[in-house]
Length: 417
Image (cartoon, rainbow, N blue to C red):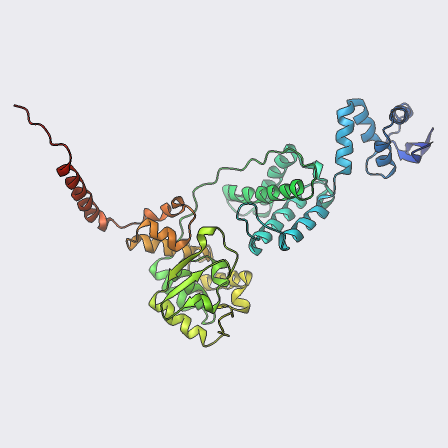
């Protein structure tokens, strides 16, 4: 063993049987501190901690960190070893994303393959994590702690504020749904590490934030007219299908001509056409007469054998559809009532529009639930507040009739003498 000075720092060099030569910087200019680190190495060697000495030799840990953990006790040494041996997050996340895209990638919640849009969102969330984590992609799985996630929240708020200096202060902070989406990606990744890779996962608490009620956004009659006028002929069949059936974008882009029964004016959504969100998404949806005519004309312009996609090529690409949607919204002046048009409406709002119109037309809740493929009535209830008051008298009359019929067959009221 020896302590020597090279440059401005003291170094330690040892050559023991079982470990080989180890040379490491103490990162200190104080000789007594360097000698104390040398004594720490001797203590670890005498007690057979070749695992830690091997990590030091491989430069997976530093001598100052090893000395600090030595002074804190055995638990700190074990934690240092776990952190050093933990795989780099960048490599792990790449493997996880590849697994999500593979046939083995099955969601434990839906028991179905992950949708491409879900994988894309997970990737975006992890790119955000790597930007904030101090070590970036080189951070270790064991580095994920409650404190690190708390720092992530703060860093995201600061970064967002720096990128949006011209906006109001209350617009700069990322929304609760943004944080929750990121933590969902983290949760899914850590579940894969634990269950599929059999790795030791840190016991962190992913505290999601309470989200406000979703923005009620649907298109008015005027907006629907402007949307159709501004929409290129190529894209209108897709957007009209979303509006007239209320099906999801993924469901529409997965349709094949064998799923459409134009003569019967029906449309079948099933697992064979596209990955479905839930089992209740399998359903038969009626086609309106205008939509049936639109799709008949569309059928003459695209390949239309039974197994061909109804919306092929660009029409079946979610990213291309979203970009086209934004252009159409801008061209049609579809906005939130502000001074300038903005593409604040999303393609999903066509589905909301269908639900609102169905409720306003007096379609009962159970039928709306079935038509839209909701797993629970709770999802459908948000459209019920749009049910028209014109039905109030009719509903009251039905209730009165039912009460009268029930009371006539029930116990009679006894009159007092």
